[in-house]
Image (tube, rainbow, N blue to C red):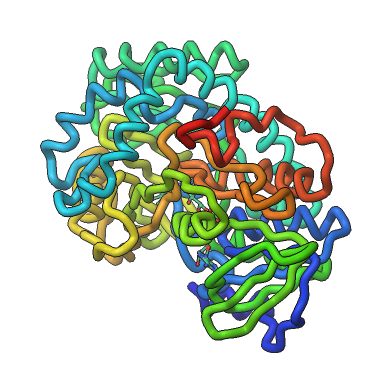
Length: 433
Ligand SMILES: Cc1cc2nc3c(=O)[nH]c(=O)nc-3n(C[C@H](O)[C@H](O)[C@H](O)COP(=O)(O)OP(=O)(O)OC[C@H]3O[C@@H](n4cnc5c(N)ncnc54)[C@H](O)[C@@H]3O)c2cc1C
């Protein structure tokens, strides 16, 4: 992945000793921030040891899921947890040795599922999605990358009447937010996606669902467009960030130091190392996800298929057919268990009997996740010149352009487009206001 990025994005060898805005992390969040900041007249340096899209942003399912406004910790979802956990290769696993570490996060996750929290979370997420949709239109147009995004729609599938009925309250919430969808059954379902197994009872179409052709090359294209406007990219790992006089001093692992007027921390699932140094203890965990990308032609797909009851999706991408999802609360250091990718592939074959499952490439990525399914976007406790932009969980691609707009507004001391209170990085602190 990194080699392809190097072919299209030039990495600075000799770093200047100072930067106007330094962005830590070149995933889709950091790269989109760089583009928006540069477009707003700022001068940006992005730094990442893996290069552009070297981690999670490379291998995701490629959807702009603007209709996904329901937090994960709903009553319906929590009810499925015992069944899911009972299956070691099911939609949710926690490696036993990681359980003690993740328990505080799980308690907050459970608390996020209380009715008062859910309603507030849906309102905030719906606002963020409206902003993100408009900001994506802007970014795609400004960066000249319209050909990389298509409105193909999505189809969520249910295997039983019970499963279908259980989904209806969430669709009612979306209706309140003016999100368009259509339930389909019987022969209509077969027309919407030919070749589906007859085990499916019903489906829901979201016609406005958009997809990128490939999340990796989408991120690289944004980086290249930012670079064409003067943004700089460098390879390197940031070891420490600290306030110093009027600005911020940043030290890299290789011993180099930089002075930056302002800093954006967009380090995805790894952001906590730096935010802790800055005085913010944020309950960031990673929901690891797996997939297999099959060669193009593995199946004819009209749109993304979502198997909510099984926790995975099948995405038609330009680079092939990607089958994946699942959540493994396993932290950053335990090795991958690709039997999870195999298990989803096996299910996909049962759901689409014509699927050719040979020649796939497996991958694991680290979703950066906060317990309430909302990202952390806001100032650091250390000062207004350090802004956090991470924790987008399942929705980082979807909310990348919206986040970039908000980060630009925060750094330029402009009023943010939406109320950022629900996204405050410090909202989980014991005495958070
Ligand atoms: C299986 C799967 C499917 C998904 N599908 C979708 C989808 O369809 N739609 C969607 O919207 N989202 C999806 N997501 C989620 C999405 O991929 C993530 O939310 C998003 O990629 C997060 O972007 P990011 O830039 O925050 O993190 P990353 O892409 O992980 O980037 C963070 C970067 O920061 C760098 N970094 C970390 N620490 C430092 C440091 N100290 N110094 C310098 N650099 C540092 C890392 O090297 C990394 O490159 C999916 C995720 C998975 C796993």
